[in-house]
Image (tube, rainbow, N blue to C red):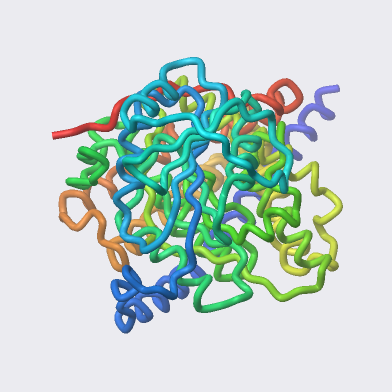
Length: 469
């Protein structure tokens, strides 16, 4: 019996180590592709005057969709921000998804909105609409009040009420930089095969936002805020840019992403009762476009920036990351027939297998490694060199990816230009590997274990007002 237990422990040890070696190689490849793509993009920006598009009559009109559920703390600042964007023709559609707080009341009172009869074509399914409101203050603002159906259902209502050929999804606790719409729409103008574009999402904690304007950009004051800033930089400046460079992007953040409306309608809109709706809709687009045999491209840009509120305590981080993992598993299982299927090209043969191995199963191996490898060393099953190699890989992966992302941000975007900002981010890139990374890995493992229990529920995170002067 003891020999069997030893063999089991040793097997887990080697699986965990093999996983860490494989993911290290994979992440380095992503970082390399991201660095090359970012270098090319910076060269393009040097010879591009995007400002000439502000008043151009050739720009594609855009519908901004803002699903809102219990967002009274941030909704007014978000809408103020969106109504000030530098773009020639766009509309803002706020979809109140049955909020139980004062979200709707604040909007109606602040913008002096009145109920109207608004006919619309139900191109994709959504829960019944109770009332539509408009205001003489802003002709491009519309509020749709509907029964609660979840974020995906609210976005579907936004698609149905939208007038324009490109729709942009937003979160109600986020703000955009003034030129964000121009930047994210340029790929649609340059290439008719582009069907979706994602933009960078950053942490707004520490930033000064007043009357919808981003007055000053700073790092968050809290430790958790700084750790999440590093995490977001690593995710977007390595993972998303690298995946887009390989034509294998599977996630466009629900906080900021643009789509051709006709493509969203073709795939049936967003999938209701799916908490990973942002990834789900992109995978559906891949499936549909490959099935139709049409050339298409899903792009990602590093500079159309959206600033969003992060969780500010461990409990909310736990709930958010567990939902993310459950949403990921939900999408992978829905589209399991696409994985390792050459019919779906790089998506089926590269990116979906990557998510299955490293994002779905990977947290199991890594979490078990944190427990089993020290136990095996204590029992004399493995030597200290084996244990040190595992934890060295853990630290090296996180440190190189984080530092690489910080360097790329400093080279290309420079949103944190101060030396003190870079030094602070570098310090937290190191600290991230001693507790916060392990915390997130364990959460993903718990999400794996609790998939069935939470696959249809988003839960809630308490919002705070944006900081002013």
